Amino acid sequence: MPLESERIEGQIAFIETLDALKGIQRRNLVMDGSRRENSAEHSWHTALMAVVLAEYAGAPVDVARVVTMLLLHDVVEIDAGDTFCYDEAANGHKAERERAAAGRIFGLLPPEQAAPLRALWEEFEAGQTPEARFANSLDRFQVLFQNRNTQGGTWRLHDISRPQVERRMAPIRQGMPALWPVVQAVLDDACASGDLKP
Image 1 (cartoon, rainbow, N blue to C red):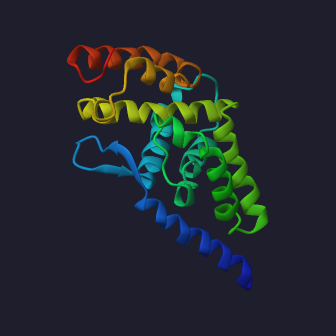
Image 2 (image 1 turned 135 degrees about the vertical axis):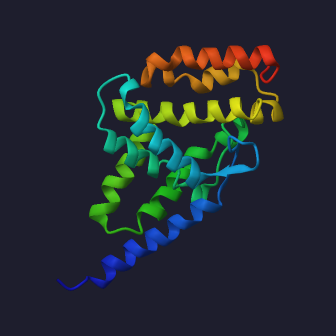
């Protein structure tokens, strides 16, 4: 079967564009504290977490769908950049920047591929399905352990308090309710050690 040049060119353009995700620096440190994590590493890490922690999903989920969602959830950062979750001003126009980025990046693909992948990205953002709730929980859970393993990491650096972290971790209550006590235990320890403001 001969290749359709326009189709493969669009697919290759999408693949080449994804490489830029490796250069998007997040605020969080990798768990050994040696450097900041990039968005591609974060996506890979949370996708593998979905495989390992699937038994804790708050409702039955299609794990392959969750993995794909997590691999896609931050591709918009290629154009929109990473927005620090505790930066209220930057978060005010984040959705608009990310929608524009989604249009451009997913638009590189043939329409029959672009539509379902963008729909998964939108599903993650909406956080309404069992898969999206689980994926959002994993997105938050990973960062919890980055901060635990770096003695407060970005919490200390940005003077973040426990109530702020609990609000950020709130999706875990629905997406992985059995692990909410783990969240509380990590925050208890962080407050006791001075790694997190009460």
